[in-house]
Structure formats: C-alpha cells, structure tokens
Length: 633
Ligand code: SF4
View 1: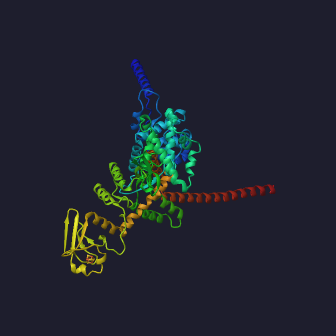
View 2: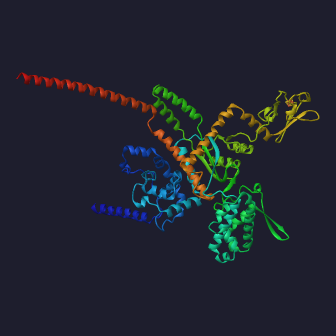
View 3: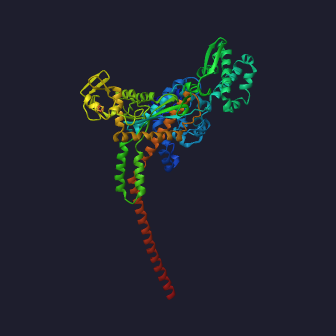
C-alpha cells in the first residue's frame, strides 16, 4: 500500500516537473485572465480604493476587454520553441490600446506600465517584478508594427465593440454617421515648398546611398536646396516673386528627373519616385523642337489627391478642411429610451421627496447614463475622399457584425438616391436631407400629389391628370389643355405643352428625390433628424480625450492604427460611465440610506443628551448627599 502511494506520489511529481519544463520551453507567453484568483492579489487596496479602482476604466478593461483581445492573431508572429519568451501577449496588446486611449508618448506608456497601479489592475498584472511590469521601447515598437502591418487594430475594434454591445445590451436600431478631419504629424506646405522639400529629400538620399552620382550634380542644386538656410529661403518668398520662384523650382525638379531617368538604381529610390509624382501632379510637360518644356499647372487644375508633403505621401487635400485624413464614425444613439428614462426619472424623483433637489438631480443623471452610445464603425480615409462613398461600407461592416441599424442619420453628402436605395435593400433606412435646394416661386415635382407607386394623383391646383403612363423607370402624366392653358401658375409649372395635352414627364429617381424633399418639410423628419447633430459632440469628445485631430504619426497605416484604437478608447470611457452608474447605489437607495443615517444620528444625539442629563443628575445628587453628610458629621 505504501509502495503504491509512494509510486503515485512520484508520478505526480514527475507530471508537475514535465508541465513546468513544457512551460519553460513555451516562448509565446499568455496568461488565463478568465479564471479568478484563490487569494485576492488586490486585497492590499482596501475597500474604498478597491471600489474606486473597480468603478474606473481599469475595472471595465480588466473585466470585459482584456480577455477578449485577439491574441491568437498576434501569436503566429512569434516562434513557439525558439528565442526569448514574449511579454504576456494580452498585456502587450492592452498596453497598445491604453497608450492610444490616453494619448501618451512611448516613454510615458512605459512609465505607466512600470509604476501605475491602475494600469496593473487593468492589465491583470499581479506581480511587481521587472519581468511583469517592464517593457522595452523596442518591444513596444515591434508589437505596434505587427498590429499595424496586419490591420489587427480593426480586429481589436470589432471585437471590443461587439463585446461592449453584448454586455451593455446596446440598442443598435438607431445610428448616425459623420466624418471628422484629422492631421498627421506633418507641416502644411505651399506649392513652392512642396517642390523644394521634395528636391532636398532626394538630394539627401542620393548623398547617402549614391555618393558617386551625388558628386556629379551641379553645385547650384546643393547651394539652393541642401544648405542650412535653404528651407527658410523658400518659406520667405515675397508674393510678388512667388510665380518666378515656382517656375525656377519646377525646372530644377524637372532637370533632376531628366538627369537620372536612365539610372535604374536611382529611379527605384522612393525620393526619386516622389519627384516624378510632383512633376506629374503639378506640371505639364510638352515636346517642342528644342526638347521637352515644363510649365506649371494652374492651381485649380491640381488634383486634391496630389502630394501635400513628402514626409507623408498618403495625406491628401480637402477643399473644406485642408490637408490630412478623415475618419468616418458611426455610432448608436438613444432617442426613445432617453425620453422614457426622463419619464421614469421624473416618476422616481417625485417619489423621492419634492424638496430634496440633490437626490432628484442625482436620480436624473444616473438614469440617463445607463444607456450606452457606442461607436460601431470606424474607417480612416484620405481627406479627398467623398463622404458619399462611405455610407455603404459602414452599413455593410455593421451588418457583418450583427450591428445593422434600422435607421441611419447622416448629412446630405451621404444621402444620394443610390445610397438610400441600396441601404434600403440591406435593411437600413437612411434619413438625410437631399442635396441642392428648390427655387422659390417655382412649382416642383414635390408640390404634386402622388400615389405610393409614383403615379400623379393631382397637380398643385387640384386637377387630376387625364392619363398616366409608366414605362421602365419613366412616368408621363397628361393634363387637360383647358386646365393648364388658363392656369395662373402655368409659367412656374414643370408641365410642357403637347399636341393634345400638357405633359409632365419624370423619372423614378426624380420622383423619389421629390418625395424626400417634401418629407424634409414635415415635423416627423425634423424630429428624427435633430438627433444627427449629437455626433458633433462625439467628434469633440474623440479629439478632447484622445487627441485624434493631431496625431504623432505619419502615413496611412499608422494613422489608421491610431484613429481606430482611439475609438476603442472612447467606447471604453463611455462604457465606464454607464457601468459606474449601474453598479453604484440607485438614487432611491441613496435617498433611503441618507434618511436612515439622519434618523440614526438624531436618535443617537437624543439618547446621548438624555443619558448625559441623567448622569449629571445622578452625580450631583450623590455628591451633594456625601457633602451634606460630611458637613453634618
Ligand atoms: S399648369 Fe396645369 S398642371 Fe400645372 S398647376 Fe396649373 S393646372 Fe396644374
């Protein structure tokens, strides 16, 4: 018996040793964040600090986000049995999200990871060892590069949004869409400086990689573009000399392109390709008897997707908002719920106490906070892209993740007829004003009365058509000559005179737009559409909390990475507020607690006062009796 138990014990020890050896061999380090701890590692915080921690973003991140991070997508980029063990991958991905959410630099991020207990709580770091709380800059850069190169930021956004939508039971039926302009870390350059900086960049790279060819270049290029004060020279050009300077820099750029056009090694350089791009976008090259001649394009002929700064070739130009990028944001909003909550809150507050204004206000605030408005779609584009092309991808992306809205509010640029019709097929009604406006004192199609299928029922004067025809997508309605010929509105009416009748001809699309224009004037549309403006507050929050409008990075991939993870941050901050409102005591309970404590203190005070009086009486009577006995003795 003792032999068996000894043998079993040895087997168990062997098994544990094997597990430990296997663990040591694993280079991909992940931790199970779903299983709880036998002994609470955060017991040292004390109940008040623990509650504070739990109610902060750190509590929400630890409970819902950390364990859902797509570690399985990043693990394949590390080797299982070779090299040094990785940092705990959930923690590493979490650090990347928190950095963007808090808009801090790389150095600040590493300090937060090393010393900030809130970060440790959020990332489930229970040890204070260097191994657990230290990350080198190189590791941070490597992790970020893996996420950026493989577009894992979008996967992180989708997974976290889906989790929050599920946990907070978000109402996705009503959503709104808009774009915000953002800038990468680049300067705004005028035309002269675009030429000058591109040439300078090329010369610097040529000097670095092809020294032999660099020496063959004319000295005037080096004097004009490579000297210390060269860049300031081009930023101080007088307006009267700008045309002349522009011609001179464009011919320099053309000359350099021509010099190296047959050199394969130089042509493959990125800086040479940028020179070719600037030449193509800004100049016209014509063949003449004396060879090729370069002339500048007019400013209005330069495309908005032209190069804005050689340091960020992906940035483009928007005539409304300037150079940079734009982010399409779609979010849920609560309309009916809010109204309902107002009513509920008012009922609750009435039952609290009429003169207890604090309790009523707390009640209203807390109840409002319990509806989470979640960003459901983020898409980073260059600044020159039209908003009209952003609506359908947003709806399709939401549909793929079961977040399809029933109603989508957007401004007029998104609401083209094609977009509205396609969205309707997908199951979403787009509520957006139509483009353009109706001329005053004219009768448009929207002034006629139509059936549901687009057939004219009557004209603005109340006359029914004699005949109506519908073929493919075209409609014709004929009105009596007697009616139209004598009509005072004839000059402003879209009907045209024919042989037998006056005819109104229109297409399905025009009819649909006319119906939308008529609907825009109704109170129902105004009541629905007023909720669109709320997204401007979201854009403001997006910038204030995460600094999205002025990023520290350049290039489309890096900009997309930052903007997407910053949107994740906004969702986390919003969900934290809602969660805090849900787990904190209800206003009614707060009020009851306050009344009970007042009652308790009142009773205590009364008891103490009476006991003191009784004690005093007893003491005085005893003392006076002794004194009188002594004096008698
Ligand atoms: S012109 Fe003819 S169709 Fe137009 S409003 Fe007058 S009656 Fe009606």
